[in-house]
Length: 305
Image (cartoon, rainbow, N blue to C red; front, side):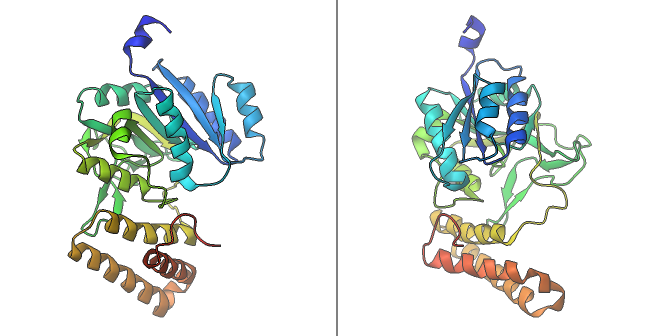
């Protein structure tokens, strides 16, 4: 390690791979092409059967691979990598989906802004659709009046409308960089969530503890997993419903917010039940009902089959 690297904060990127060999290899390649040098990559392999582990070892022998013994979802799986990164004394942990491609300057820009203020605890890049490289997927996230999550500038063509770093409620979980000190203060990702809204809860926890959460448009990344015409499957509806109420409950949302969320959900269920044009939403309706039921019964983790 040279003198310049010693002066840089140490960044460890954590990639969760689940039978996505080619995507993971491409993501690692983009990370290793980074202009930021004091950096290491950890891959969490979720019992892949597509030859991912051997392919990574051959192509990128410097990458550490950690085998996951069970599927604990985005939250639990990534916590394994976060713990490993902390044990290896990372200053910043960069959690990435395997289907992301980074601009070479991405890590450098994130660290530069993150280090500019000791109260900045979580940073994230400007995320674009991979299949539409100039179309924004997320410029950070906000919570609406009922604390439901949405993404700033989603599906907008980039015409320079998002230029300056800006404070947000949360960072997209496909690429979120977290300061080590935050995790020591507020803890890991809440594993009850399993999938969806866990990053919003984590960021909310950080903000309530006095940390700033910031989107950095000069840091750029392209995400394959969500296209403009993305149509989520019913299991997504289940997790988003259950975990929305879990978020509200965990952070003691005002009664008006809590009731508004329930009324909005019940209205959606009725609409998907009685309106002929929503016949195709019946599976989503059932998933939403199950999500609400499991919230009330305190059933967390993976959706029941």
